[in-house]
Structures are given as structure tokens and as C-alpha cells.
Length: 140
Image (cartoon, rainbow, N blue to C red; front, side, top):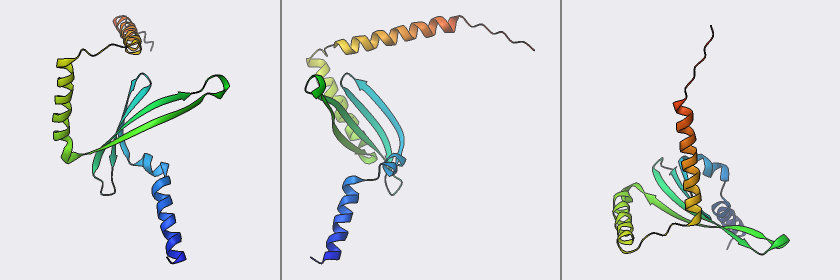
């Protein structure tokens, strides 16, 4: 292969694999994160080069290896790209899969869900208490 052509190919591969994080952040038009124990799910609405929107679903799981000073933390990530023309079929399939699980197996409540729910309840109660005590003091 021609050395110039080879260099151009390597540069293109580098651009594809390294990517420009600033460019990737710019294409996100909406983002929602869902924390679930050691996992975080990201729902990112992005635009492609044709300005068409699609959904990028990312599961990020924290992996801790070793103990003491030798602890190494890494994140395992899995992505799914869902395009507008597939939304309806995907939702139907997802709803069917969830219904199947709910009918056949009780979903276990884990400690971290219960703690999260307790925090949510405390926050809600505090908001309710503070919202019921509205005091306005305006001096002119």
C-alpha cells in the first residue's frame, strides 16, 4: 500500500476510535440518568450528521478490583442505539418482556433501592412540610 494512503487510513481510524469528546457532547440534545445501585443508565437523545435524532442507551457499571491501596476502579459500558423508525417495535417488545417477568417472578427489592426510596420519602416529607408553611414578608 502507498505510504501516503496508509498514513491517511491510520489517521481516519484514529479519528474513528478516539473521537472528539467535545463534538460528542455537542450532539447530545437531551440526557437523563437513572441510578440503580452500582449501575447508572444514561438515556441520551443525540443528533446524527443529518440532524436526525436517535436514542443512545448506555449502561455503566462500576467495577472495583483489589483491596486497600491496590484498588482499581473501572467502568464497564454497554450501548444500544435506537432509531426513530424502531421506537414502536422496541417499546412493544420491551413492554412484553417486562410483563412476562412481572407475571412469573416477583421483582426483589434490594437494600439500595429501599435506602433510595427512604431518602425520596424524607425529601418529599420535607418539601411538604416546607410548602405548607408559606410565609411572605414584603417591606416596601
